[in-house]
Image 1 (cartoon, rainbow, N blue to C red):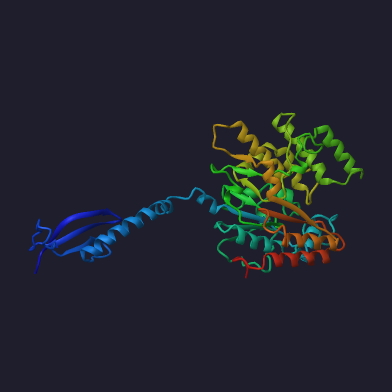
Image 2 (image 1 turned 60 degrees about the vertical axis):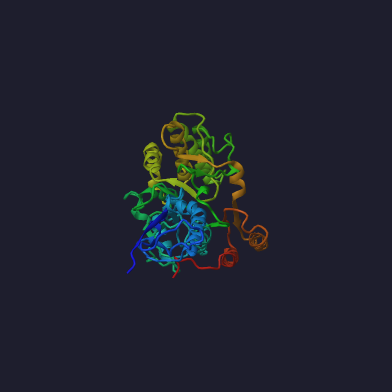
Length: 427
Protein backbone atom coordinates (compact mmCIF):
# COMPACT_ATOMS: atom_id res chain seq x y z
CA UNK A 1 0.00 0.00 0.00
CA UNK A 2 1.31 3.44 -0.89
CA UNK A 3 2.32 5.69 1.97
CA UNK A 4 1.11 9.28 1.94
CA UNK A 5 3.12 12.09 3.48
CA UNK A 6 2.36 15.81 3.87
CA UNK A 7 3.45 17.82 0.87
CA UNK A 8 2.58 21.32 2.05
CA UNK A 9 0.37 22.77 4.74
CA UNK A 10 -1.98 25.21 3.02
CA UNK A 11 -4.38 26.68 5.57
CA UNK A 12 -4.81 26.65 9.31
CA UNK A 13 -7.88 27.79 11.20
CA UNK A 14 -11.59 27.19 10.94
CA UNK A 15 -11.23 24.56 13.65
CA UNK A 16 -8.89 22.42 11.54
CA UNK A 17 -5.85 22.26 9.25
CA UNK A 18 -5.89 21.84 5.49
CA UNK A 19 -2.91 19.93 4.06
CA UNK A 20 -1.85 18.78 0.58
CA UNK A 21 -0.62 15.18 0.58
CA UNK A 22 1.15 13.03 -2.06
CA UNK A 23 2.18 9.41 -2.53
CA UNK A 24 5.55 8.93 -0.83
CA UNK A 25 6.56 6.46 -3.55
CA UNK A 26 6.32 9.17 -6.20
CA UNK A 27 8.91 11.84 -6.81
CA UNK A 28 8.19 15.41 -7.81
CA UNK A 29 10.17 16.25 -10.96
CA UNK A 30 11.50 19.69 -11.80
CA UNK A 31 10.72 18.98 -15.47
CA UNK A 32 7.51 20.86 -16.28
CA UNK A 33 6.68 18.32 -18.99
CA UNK A 34 6.37 15.56 -16.41
CA UNK A 35 2.95 15.54 -14.71
CA UNK A 36 3.01 16.02 -10.93
CA UNK A 37 2.18 13.12 -8.67
CA UNK A 38 -1.39 12.49 -7.65
CA UNK A 39 -2.24 14.78 -4.78
CA UNK A 40 -5.08 14.82 -2.36
CA UNK A 41 -6.88 17.42 -0.29
CA UNK A 42 -6.83 16.03 3.22
CA UNK A 43 -8.32 18.33 5.87
CA UNK A 44 -7.36 17.14 9.32
CA UNK A 45 -10.70 17.90 10.92
CA UNK A 46 -12.57 16.19 13.68
CA UNK A 47 -15.76 16.02 11.63
CA UNK A 48 -14.48 14.74 8.30
CA UNK A 49 -11.52 13.19 6.49
CA UNK A 50 -11.89 13.62 2.74
CA UNK A 51 -9.48 13.32 -0.19
CA UNK A 52 -9.94 15.41 -3.33
CA UNK A 53 -7.96 15.79 -6.57
CA UNK A 54 -5.59 18.75 -6.66
CA UNK A 55 -7.71 20.89 -8.99
CA UNK A 56 -10.81 20.51 -6.87
CA UNK A 57 -8.74 21.21 -3.77
CA UNK A 58 -7.33 24.49 -5.13
CA UNK A 59 -10.77 25.67 -6.20
CA UNK A 60 -12.13 24.69 -2.79
CA UNK A 61 -9.42 26.72 -1.07
CA UNK A 62 -10.44 29.84 -2.96
CA UNK A 63 -14.11 29.25 -2.18
CA UNK A 64 -13.45 28.59 1.51
CA UNK A 65 -11.23 31.67 1.81
CA UNK A 66 -13.83 33.86 0.11
CA UNK A 67 -16.64 32.49 2.26
CA UNK A 68 -14.63 32.96 5.44
CA UNK A 69 -13.80 36.54 4.45
CA UNK A 70 -17.46 37.30 3.91
CA UNK A 71 -18.84 35.57 6.98
CA UNK A 72 -16.17 36.16 9.60
CA UNK A 73 -17.41 39.64 10.66
CA UNK A 74 -20.96 38.41 11.19
CA UNK A 75 -19.76 35.22 12.87
CA UNK A 76 -17.73 37.32 15.26
CA UNK A 77 -20.69 39.61 15.95
CA UNK A 78 -22.96 36.64 16.62
CA UNK A 79 -20.49 35.21 19.12
CA UNK A 80 -20.30 38.46 21.11
CA UNK A 81 -23.03 39.62 23.53
CA UNK A 82 -25.46 42.00 21.89
CA UNK A 83 -25.29 45.46 23.50
CA UNK A 84 -29.05 45.36 24.20
CA UNK A 85 -29.21 41.70 25.21
CA UNK A 86 -29.66 42.61 28.88
CA UNK A 87 -32.91 44.46 28.07
CA UNK A 88 -34.59 41.29 26.79
CA UNK A 89 -35.29 40.08 30.31
CA UNK A 90 -36.69 43.20 31.95
CA UNK A 91 -40.14 42.75 33.46
CA UNK A 92 -43.22 44.33 31.91
CA UNK A 93 -45.62 45.15 34.75
CA UNK A 94 -49.34 45.77 34.28
CA UNK A 95 -51.96 46.68 36.87
CA UNK A 96 -55.47 45.50 36.09
CA UNK A 97 -58.90 45.34 37.65
CA UNK A 98 -62.25 44.16 36.35
CA UNK A 99 -64.65 46.79 37.62
CA UNK A 100 -67.64 44.79 36.39
CA UNK A 101 -66.92 41.99 38.87
CA UNK A 102 -69.72 41.94 41.53
CA UNK A 103 -67.40 40.42 44.13
CA UNK A 104 -64.84 43.17 43.63
CA UNK A 105 -67.55 45.84 43.78
CA UNK A 106 -68.77 44.37 47.07
CA UNK A 107 -65.25 44.37 48.53
CA UNK A 108 -64.77 47.97 47.50
CA UNK A 109 -68.10 49.01 48.99
CA UNK A 110 -67.10 47.42 52.30
CA UNK A 111 -63.94 49.51 52.66
CA UNK A 112 -65.25 52.55 50.79
CA UNK A 113 -68.96 53.16 51.47
CA UNK A 114 -68.83 56.40 49.46
CA UNK A 115 -67.62 54.61 46.33
CA UNK A 116 -70.27 53.96 43.65
CA UNK A 117 -71.77 50.48 43.39
CA UNK A 118 -70.90 50.26 39.70
CA UNK A 119 -67.82 50.36 37.53
CA UNK A 120 -66.24 53.70 36.69
CA UNK A 121 -63.81 54.97 34.09
CA UNK A 122 -60.90 54.07 36.37
CA UNK A 123 -61.81 50.39 36.70
CA UNK A 124 -63.91 49.45 33.67
CA UNK A 125 -62.48 46.65 31.55
CA UNK A 126 -63.02 46.51 27.81
CA UNK A 127 -60.35 43.85 27.29
CA UNK A 128 -57.72 46.56 26.84
CA UNK A 129 -55.16 44.36 28.59
CA UNK A 130 -55.60 41.54 26.08
CA UNK A 131 -54.92 43.85 23.16
CA UNK A 132 -52.11 45.66 24.93
CA UNK A 133 -50.34 42.31 25.32
CA UNK A 134 -51.01 41.51 21.67
CA UNK A 135 -49.42 44.80 20.69
CA UNK A 136 -46.35 44.05 22.81
CA UNK A 137 -46.03 40.60 21.25
CA UNK A 138 -46.29 42.10 17.77
CA UNK A 139 -44.07 45.15 18.09
CA UNK A 140 -41.70 44.31 20.97
CA UNK A 141 -40.61 40.80 19.89
CA UNK A 142 -37.21 41.15 21.56
CA UNK A 143 -38.82 41.02 25.00
CA UNK A 144 -38.29 37.59 26.58
CA UNK A 145 -38.87 38.52 30.22
CA UNK A 146 -41.87 38.20 32.45
CA UNK A 147 -45.28 39.77 32.08
CA UNK A 148 -46.34 40.61 35.63
CA UNK A 149 -50.02 41.32 36.29
CA UNK A 150 -50.84 43.08 39.56
CA UNK A 151 -54.53 42.58 40.34
CA UNK A 152 -56.86 42.43 43.37
CA UNK A 153 -56.88 38.64 43.07
CA UNK A 154 -58.64 38.64 39.70
CA UNK A 155 -57.52 36.73 36.60
CA UNK A 156 -58.74 37.74 33.11
CA UNK A 157 -60.92 35.00 31.63
CA UNK A 158 -58.92 34.92 28.38
CA UNK A 159 -55.48 34.75 30.05
CA UNK A 160 -53.40 31.60 30.45
CA UNK A 161 -51.98 32.14 33.96
CA UNK A 162 -49.90 28.96 33.64
CA UNK A 163 -47.79 30.45 30.85
CA UNK A 164 -44.14 30.35 32.01
CA UNK A 165 -43.66 34.07 31.37
CA UNK A 166 -46.81 35.18 33.19
CA UNK A 167 -46.73 36.00 36.88
CA UNK A 168 -49.91 36.90 38.73
CA UNK A 169 -49.39 39.06 41.82
CA UNK A 170 -52.11 39.94 44.31
CA UNK A 171 -51.85 43.61 45.19
CA UNK A 172 -52.51 42.78 48.85
CA UNK A 173 -49.04 41.19 49.22
CA UNK A 174 -47.31 44.35 48.00
CA UNK A 175 -48.77 46.99 50.29
CA UNK A 176 -48.13 47.17 54.06
CA UNK A 177 -50.48 45.03 56.19
CA UNK A 178 -52.31 48.05 57.57
CA UNK A 179 -53.45 48.97 54.06
CA UNK A 180 -55.32 45.73 53.37
CA UNK A 181 -57.69 45.68 50.42
CA UNK A 182 -57.68 49.02 48.63
CA UNK A 183 -59.01 50.59 45.47
CA UNK A 184 -56.38 53.33 45.74
CA UNK A 185 -53.99 52.73 42.87
CA UNK A 186 -51.76 55.55 44.09
CA UNK A 187 -50.84 53.45 47.13
CA UNK A 188 -50.35 50.26 45.11
CA UNK A 189 -47.98 51.97 42.66
CA UNK A 190 -45.76 53.11 45.52
CA UNK A 191 -44.92 49.45 46.29
CA UNK A 192 -44.31 47.84 42.90
CA UNK A 193 -40.72 47.12 43.88
CA UNK A 194 -42.04 44.43 46.24
CA UNK A 195 -43.10 42.23 43.33
CA UNK A 196 -41.23 38.94 43.93
CA UNK A 197 -38.17 38.68 41.69
CA UNK A 198 -38.76 42.04 40.01
CA UNK A 199 -35.96 43.02 37.64
CA UNK A 200 -33.92 46.12 38.52
CA UNK A 201 -35.04 47.80 35.30
CA UNK A 202 -38.73 47.32 34.58
CA UNK A 203 -41.45 48.92 32.51
CA UNK A 204 -44.86 49.72 33.99
CA UNK A 205 -47.63 49.86 31.40
CA UNK A 206 -51.24 50.73 32.03
CA UNK A 207 -53.55 48.47 30.08
CA UNK A 208 -54.82 51.28 27.86
CA UNK A 209 -51.39 51.69 26.22
CA UNK A 210 -50.74 49.97 22.90
CA UNK A 211 -47.60 49.59 20.79
CA UNK A 212 -48.18 51.04 17.32
CA UNK A 213 -44.93 50.21 15.50
CA UNK A 214 -41.69 48.27 16.10
CA UNK A 215 -40.14 49.46 19.36
CA UNK A 216 -36.40 49.19 20.04
CA UNK A 217 -34.98 48.93 23.59
CA UNK A 218 -33.43 52.37 23.07
CA UNK A 219 -36.94 53.78 23.37
CA UNK A 220 -36.88 52.85 27.06
CA UNK A 221 -33.17 52.84 27.96
CA UNK A 222 -29.87 54.44 27.03
CA UNK A 223 -26.86 52.39 25.95
CA UNK A 224 -25.40 52.73 29.46
CA UNK A 225 -28.67 51.44 30.97
CA UNK A 226 -30.13 54.70 32.23
CA UNK A 227 -33.93 54.79 32.16
CA UNK A 228 -35.73 57.30 29.95
CA UNK A 229 -38.68 59.50 30.95
CA UNK A 230 -41.27 60.97 28.61
CA UNK A 231 -42.72 64.40 29.37
CA UNK A 232 -46.22 65.56 28.61
CA UNK A 233 -45.26 68.75 26.80
CA UNK A 234 -48.75 70.20 27.22
CA UNK A 235 -48.35 70.22 31.02
CA UNK A 236 -44.59 70.57 31.37
CA UNK A 237 -44.07 74.27 32.04
CA UNK A 238 -42.00 74.54 35.25
CA UNK A 239 -43.90 77.67 36.28
CA UNK A 240 -47.32 76.07 35.86
CA UNK A 241 -49.73 76.38 38.76
CA UNK A 242 -49.85 72.68 39.61
CA UNK A 243 -46.30 71.47 39.02
CA UNK A 244 -44.68 74.41 40.83
CA UNK A 245 -47.14 74.93 43.70
CA UNK A 246 -45.94 75.99 47.13
CA UNK A 247 -47.30 74.59 50.39
CA UNK A 248 -49.58 77.62 50.81
CA UNK A 249 -50.97 77.20 47.30
CA UNK A 250 -51.46 73.45 47.80
CA UNK A 251 -53.34 73.97 51.09
CA UNK A 252 -55.53 76.63 49.52
CA UNK A 253 -56.36 74.35 46.59
CA UNK A 254 -57.29 71.56 48.99
CA UNK A 255 -59.70 73.79 50.89
CA UNK A 256 -61.28 74.93 47.63
CA UNK A 257 -61.71 71.27 46.67
CA UNK A 258 -63.40 70.48 50.00
CA UNK A 259 -65.78 73.40 49.53
CA UNK A 260 -66.70 72.26 46.04
CA UNK A 261 -65.20 75.27 44.29
CA UNK A 262 -62.88 73.05 42.25
CA UNK A 263 -63.37 69.42 41.24
CA UNK A 264 -59.99 68.46 39.85
CA UNK A 265 -58.78 66.17 42.63
CA UNK A 266 -55.84 64.99 40.53
CA UNK A 267 -54.70 68.57 40.06
CA UNK A 268 -54.94 69.20 43.80
CA UNK A 269 -52.84 66.07 44.42
CA UNK A 270 -50.34 67.47 41.93
CA UNK A 271 -50.02 70.68 43.93
CA UNK A 272 -49.58 68.67 47.12
CA UNK A 273 -46.85 66.66 45.38
CA UNK A 274 -45.07 69.81 44.21
CA UNK A 275 -45.09 71.24 47.74
CA UNK A 276 -43.79 67.96 49.16
CA UNK A 277 -40.90 67.93 46.67
CA UNK A 278 -39.88 71.44 47.73
CA UNK A 279 -39.98 70.44 51.39
CA UNK A 280 -38.14 67.13 51.05
CA UNK A 281 -35.41 68.46 48.76
CA UNK A 282 -35.24 71.79 50.61
CA UNK A 283 -35.31 73.44 47.22
CA UNK A 284 -37.87 76.14 46.35
CA UNK A 285 -37.26 75.43 42.66
CA UNK A 286 -38.17 71.74 42.95
CA UNK A 287 -41.18 70.78 40.89
CA UNK A 288 -42.50 67.77 39.04
CA UNK A 289 -43.26 67.19 35.40
CA UNK A 290 -46.41 65.47 34.23
CA UNK A 291 -45.40 62.27 32.45
CA UNK A 292 -46.74 61.24 29.10
CA UNK A 293 -49.56 58.73 29.30
CA UNK A 294 -47.11 56.13 28.03
CA UNK A 295 -45.04 53.22 29.36
CA UNK A 296 -43.18 54.26 32.51
CA UNK A 297 -39.61 53.03 32.79
CA UNK A 298 -38.47 52.48 36.38
CA UNK A 299 -35.61 51.28 38.57
CA UNK A 300 -36.55 48.99 41.44
CA UNK A 301 -33.84 50.40 43.70
CA UNK A 302 -35.32 53.91 43.56
CA UNK A 303 -38.55 52.88 45.33
CA UNK A 304 -37.26 52.27 48.88
CA UNK A 305 -35.23 55.49 48.72
CA UNK A 306 -38.30 57.47 47.65
CA UNK A 307 -40.50 55.88 50.32
CA UNK A 308 -37.95 56.78 52.98
CA UNK A 309 -37.75 60.38 51.80
CA UNK A 310 -41.52 60.83 51.57
CA UNK A 311 -42.55 58.61 54.50
CA UNK A 312 -44.51 61.30 56.33
CA UNK A 313 -46.57 62.02 53.21
CA UNK A 314 -47.06 58.37 52.32
CA UNK A 315 -48.26 57.09 55.70
CA UNK A 316 -51.57 59.02 55.67
CA UNK A 317 -52.31 57.60 52.23
CA UNK A 318 -52.43 54.07 53.66
CA UNK A 319 -55.84 54.81 55.15
CA UNK A 320 -57.26 56.12 51.87
CA UNK A 321 -59.19 53.35 50.14
CA UNK A 322 -59.54 55.44 46.99
CA UNK A 323 -57.54 58.23 45.37
CA UNK A 324 -57.55 61.41 47.43
CA UNK A 325 -56.46 64.99 46.65
CA UNK A 326 -53.91 64.89 49.49
CA UNK A 327 -52.01 62.07 47.81
CA UNK A 328 -48.37 62.27 46.77
CA UNK A 329 -48.46 61.15 43.15
CA UNK A 330 -46.27 58.03 42.86
CA UNK A 331 -45.08 58.22 39.26
CA UNK A 332 -44.26 61.91 39.40
CA UNK A 333 -42.48 61.61 42.76
CA UNK A 334 -40.44 58.53 41.87
CA UNK A 335 -39.35 60.17 38.65
CA UNK A 336 -38.28 63.31 40.53
CA UNK A 337 -36.26 61.24 43.01
CA UNK A 338 -34.51 59.33 40.20
CA UNK A 339 -33.54 62.54 38.40
CA UNK A 340 -32.38 64.14 41.65
CA UNK A 341 -30.22 61.13 42.49
CA UNK A 342 -28.74 61.20 39.00
CA UNK A 343 -27.95 64.92 39.20
CA UNK A 344 -26.39 64.77 42.66
CA UNK A 345 -24.28 61.66 42.04
CA UNK A 346 -22.51 62.19 38.70
CA UNK A 347 -19.74 59.79 39.72
CA UNK A 348 -22.21 56.89 39.67
CA UNK A 349 -23.38 55.10 36.51
CA UNK A 350 -26.12 57.09 34.75
CA UNK A 351 -29.51 56.52 36.35
CA UNK A 352 -32.10 58.44 34.35
CA UNK A 353 -32.59 60.96 31.58
CA UNK A 354 -35.48 62.85 30.01
CA UNK A 355 -36.23 62.14 26.36
CA UNK A 356 -36.09 65.14 23.99
CA UNK A 357 -39.39 67.06 23.74
CA UNK A 358 -39.75 66.35 20.04
CA UNK A 359 -39.50 62.61 20.68
CA UNK A 360 -42.08 62.78 23.46
CA UNK A 361 -44.46 64.69 21.22
CA UNK A 362 -44.04 62.61 18.07
CA UNK A 363 -43.59 59.08 19.41
CA UNK A 364 -46.51 58.94 21.86
CA UNK A 365 -50.17 59.78 21.38
CA UNK A 366 -52.76 60.16 24.14
CA UNK A 367 -56.42 59.90 23.16
CA UNK A 368 -59.73 59.27 24.91
CA UNK A 369 -62.90 57.38 24.11
CA UNK A 370 -66.02 59.30 25.09
CA UNK A 371 -69.81 59.09 24.92
CA UNK A 372 -69.67 60.78 21.50
CA UNK A 373 -70.03 57.83 19.11
CA UNK A 374 -69.32 59.92 16.00
CA UNK A 375 -66.12 61.28 17.51
CA UNK A 376 -65.02 57.79 18.53
CA UNK A 377 -65.65 56.47 15.05
CA UNK A 378 -63.55 59.22 13.48
CA UNK A 379 -60.72 58.61 15.96
CA UNK A 380 -60.59 54.88 15.33
CA UNK A 381 -60.74 55.40 11.56
CA UNK A 382 -57.63 57.58 11.80
CA UNK A 383 -55.75 55.10 13.97
CA UNK A 384 -56.59 52.26 11.58
CA UNK A 385 -55.89 54.35 8.49
CA UNK A 386 -53.49 57.22 7.84
CA UNK A 387 -52.06 57.37 11.38
CA UNK A 388 -51.47 53.64 11.74
CA UNK A 389 -47.90 52.83 12.71
CA UNK A 390 -46.88 56.48 13.03
CA UNK A 391 -45.92 56.27 16.72
CA UNK A 392 -44.24 53.99 19.21
CA UNK A 393 -47.29 53.85 21.49
CA UNK A 394 -50.74 55.32 21.71
CA UNK A 395 -53.11 55.32 24.66
CA UNK A 396 -56.89 55.45 24.74
CA UNK A 397 -58.15 56.59 28.11
CA UNK A 398 -61.69 55.84 29.23
CA UNK A 399 -63.57 59.14 29.47
CA UNK A 400 -67.00 57.58 28.99
CA UNK A 401 -70.05 58.28 31.10
CA UNK A 402 -73.63 57.13 30.77
CA UNK A 403 -73.10 55.98 27.19
CA UNK A 404 -70.16 53.71 28.09
CA UNK A 405 -71.80 50.61 26.61
CA UNK A 406 -71.77 52.11 23.11
CA UNK A 407 -68.31 53.59 23.49
CA UNK A 408 -67.00 50.36 24.99
CA UNK A 409 -68.31 48.35 22.05
CA UNK A 410 -66.64 50.75 19.62
CA UNK A 411 -63.37 50.46 21.52
CA UNK A 412 -63.44 46.66 21.53
CA UNK A 413 -64.21 46.51 17.82
CA UNK A 414 -61.35 48.87 17.05
CA UNK A 415 -58.85 46.93 19.15
CA UNK A 416 -59.91 43.62 17.62
CA UNK A 417 -59.39 45.06 14.13
CA UNK A 418 -56.05 46.64 15.02
CA UNK A 419 -54.62 43.58 16.83
CA UNK A 420 -56.32 40.46 15.43
CA UNK A 421 -53.50 37.98 16.18
CA UNK A 422 -53.71 36.35 19.65
CA UNK A 423 -50.62 36.52 21.81
CA UNK A 424 -48.92 33.50 23.37
CA UNK A 425 -50.38 34.55 26.73
CA UNK A 426 -53.96 33.74 25.77
CA UNK A 427 -55.80 30.47 26.25
